[in-house]
Length: 268
Image (cartoon, rainbow, N blue to C red; front, side):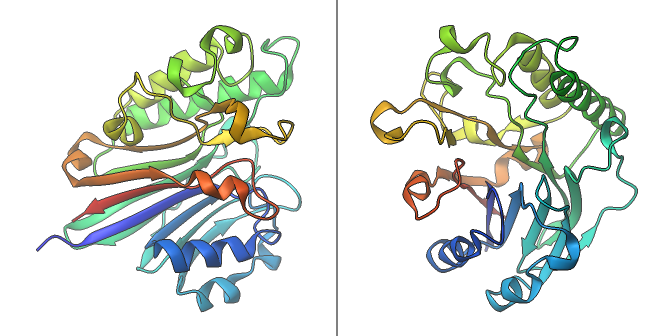
């Protein structure tokens, strides 16, 4: 009989500030694995014991003070992937990977936090945008040469690639996160060997968001969202996909992140 595995990915925007939200996720959703981005905590201060108390005995994380940071929390054994690159020559804690054990064999799980890219969509005028484009290009080349199999790739990619991944395709084409150069590069990365697991369940013609700006006080009424958070799988895992949901209600939690968790269920 197939065994279910629930995976959650979430840009938590400060793990220590929102540690109670992990407890909420653990008790209401019972995830097997939680992948976090923008943890904003240096490794010596990572709240490992508090997370183990919630049942996540297997932890892998890489963080820095105040910025970036990624973490994988698992109820099942994991083995860190070693010798991963420092993308664009920066040690800025934007990628970790593990080998996750499942009943049908090991799976590589990658957790990414792609640079946001600043406000000006010009790599010459804006070094942050240049960094973002170069980051995605380097990652794409790396995966292309490795031809991944049995792999899951999640995270905050800071790019909403499809027309209905944003509230207004026309108005956001010149806004960082939905510009053609970003979309082209993210599409090339996905085409390096992955399938969009969220759009496996929700057609491209339907709106799908995971982020709403803090600047919009009545975010629910205006619903000016973007899908910046993603889950990809290699084609050999598409038959293992069972269900997907976006925990939109998390945007209304006390002191919320501007992102909400994405939940994907697998069977193995």
